[in-house]
Picture 1: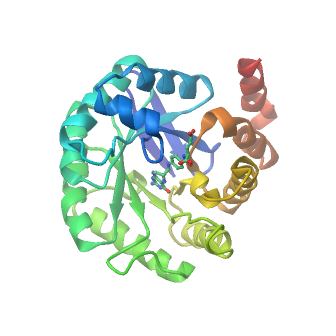
Picture 2: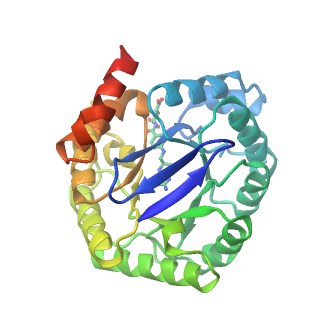
Amino acid sequence: MKTILKSETKEIAINTEGPVTIIGEKINPTGRKKLSRLLKERDFDYVRGLADAQVAAGADILDVNVGVPGEDEVALLPEVVKIVAAHVDVPLCLDSANAEALAAGLAVAPGKPLVNSVNGEEASLKAVLPIVKDRGAAVIGLTMDDDGIPKDAEKRVAIAGKILERAAKIGIPEEDVVIDPLVLTVGADNSAGIVTLKTVELLRSEFGININLGASNVSFGLPDRHVINQAFLALAAYAGASCVISDPVKLASTIRATDLLLSRDSSGRAYLKHYRAMQ
Ligand code: THG
């Protein structure tokens, strides 16, 4: 199954049968003092640099999150979307829990963007799905609802089913819904990784849809995070994830190596191309 996204001039497909698609995560001020300060000052050169570095490292899509406490996301998200879209020609993933900010960002984003995200909460389904439909965008659906993130895989799959059903009801096709079974840190609960991997397998066999993971979440609070993220990415791809939100500067080569090992990269072309680009 293919989820087609577009920038101004380019089209990319998140593909259940293809190589893993990389959404660059670094335009996100959560826990990043410098980016928070510069966003507050409306100084966007640093954002342009983060966009360049991630695309050069192999990002297929860029996540844009401007959630700085105290700042007006409804004004700031479209402003940063315009800056990034004018600077790099890749599809954008608009990352906010605020439906009004998402709508404002969608109004200025080129092509066909990805909305990050809707979840199984009634308020989220009602607020986010109509704006996705109106814009003809695609959307990431998180497997959580009014009761939080379920501890077991079957309940997460049930929430995914509900999101797919509600999207279909208002005319969003299933290929435009990418389900994210949510990664929590193994630093807090050592079963967090395996529950997510099990959910990926079940989602893949029940729905055959594209699956995204915010892979770096798995290592929050632990030392040498990079090593944990690399190992998790390989396991997630094997379980059936077709898209990851991660840091391409640190993780793109692991992703290309994993595709090669899983026969998702015929004759190793993408692996070699990435290797040469990094020299
Ligand atoms: N699913 C979806 N969207 C998401 C997430 C998800 N968006 C946000 C998040 N999770 C994915 N993005 C990040 C961004 C940064 C980090 C982790 C996940 C991160 N940052 C370092 C820190 O906070 O310590 C700083 C990194 C740096 O300085 O380079 O770890 O799961 N749909």
